[in-house]
Length: 168
Image 1 (tube, rainbow, N blue to C red):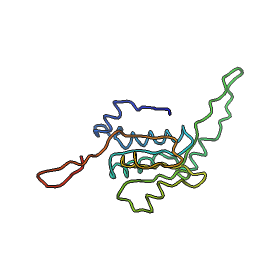
Image 2: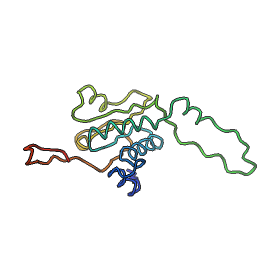
Image 3: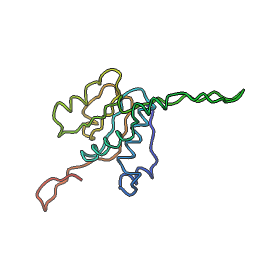
Image 4: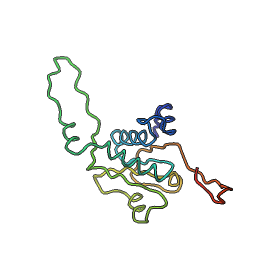
C-alpha cells in the first residue's frame, strides 16, 4: 500500500478553517481528484461529518472538468520539439465530470443511497465515495484503490447543562 501525505501546514490550516483556499473540504477535494488522476479505481474519502461531506462533494464536482475540456486536454500538441529532444511527457489520466459519480455515505442517508455508495459502480464509471469515519471500520467498498482520510472525527460527549450527548 502506498501512503502519501498532504503538507502538514495545509492540513492544519484546512482543519481550523484559517485559510479560505486551504479549507478542509478543499484539501480533501484536491487529494481526491489527484487520486482519480493517479490511480485506476475508485476513491474513498473520510470526513468528520455530514456538513463536511456535502461541502466536499460540491468541491470535488467543481474540480472535475467537463467532458469537452477533458477531451481538449487529451489532444496532443504537434509542436516540433527538435532533433534529439526528449519525447513529450505522457499526460496523466484525464477524468471528467461525466465519467465520475461522487456519492455521500453516512448513517442518516436512506438505505437506497447507502447501497448505491457501497455496491460496485457501473462498468466504465469511476466513483468518489465521501463518507464519515463510522464507515472506516465497518464496511468494505469494492473497487477502491485510493483512500483520502482527513484524520478528523466527531465524538459524542455528554453535555451536563443540556442533559444530552453532543458531537465535538
